[in-house]
Length: 340
Image (cartoon, rainbow, N blue to C red; front, side, top):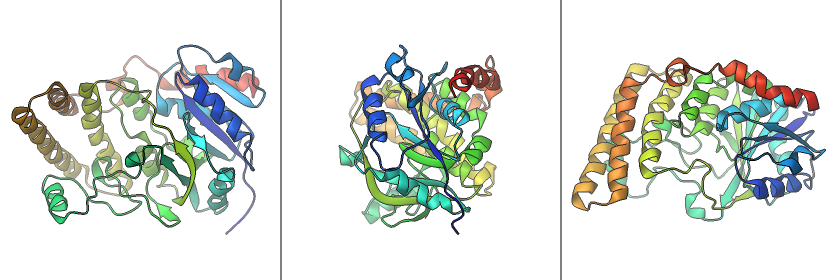
C-alpha cells in the first residue's frame, strides 16, 4: 500500500578516486529525481577540495578507510527517509534510476531496494557458484558449496543468480543499495567495522542485506541503470591477503546467516570447516600438480585465514581492542552536522 512520498539522500563512499566521484556526482544532478543531499564520505589520502566546496555535496572526511564504517557515517549525516548507496566508480545510464529505486519503498513492508547494473567486463556480473553441468553441481555439493536459488543467500556468503523479474530477494550487490534510514542505522553491527579495519572483511553487502531483511522485505528491479567500469579495487591486495580475507570472513557470513534465518550456529561452524577443508585440499593439490607463486599464495592464504578463524574471535574487542567505534563515529560526524 502506498502511503507518502519519501525523501532520499545519495551516499557515495570513496577512496582515491577523485575523477570517478566527480563524474558520478555530476550525473546524479542530471537525473529526473534528485536527492536532498549527495553525501560523499571520503577516506582518500588527500582531501577533495572541489567536492568539499560544492553546494550540492555534503562532504565528510572519514578517519577510517573502511567501507561499512563510511556507509554508516553517510547514513548518520542524512536527514532523509531513505539512503541510497552508490559505488564511486559507477556510471549512470538511466536518468530514472532514483524513481525506480524509491517506488518499491512507498510500501511500508519494503525496507530495501536495488536495481541492476552491468559490468563493462560482463563476465563479472551475476557471478556465483552455479554451473549448468550436472557433474560440476555434484562436485560442488560434495565439497560443501551451497546452491542457493535466484535472489537468495546461503551460508558462507554464497548467493544465487540475480533474478530476471522484479520481486523480493534476500541480498543486494553493494554497488547500488537503498534502505530506509531508520532501519539501516539500527541494524549495522560494529563487528563489521572491526572486520574491515583489520582487512579481514569481505562481502559486506551480503551482511548488510541479510541483517536488514530481518526488518522487512528487500525488492530488486532487474532494469539495468548503471555501468560498472573495470577498475582496480580500492582494497586490492596480494593473492595471499585476498584469500586470508575470503576464508576468514566466510565464518562471519555463516554466523549472520544463522542469526537471520534461525539456523543452529554450531552446525554452520562444522559446515564452514568442511567447506574450508576442501578449498584447502584443492588449492594444495593444484600447487603440487603445477607449482606457481599465485597458487602457493592462495594455498597459504587459505591456511592462514582458516587458522585465524580458529584462534581469533570475530568481535570488536578481539579484532580492534584499541578503538571505541562509537566515539570515532561521533568525531567524524561533527563536520557533517556543522554543514548540515
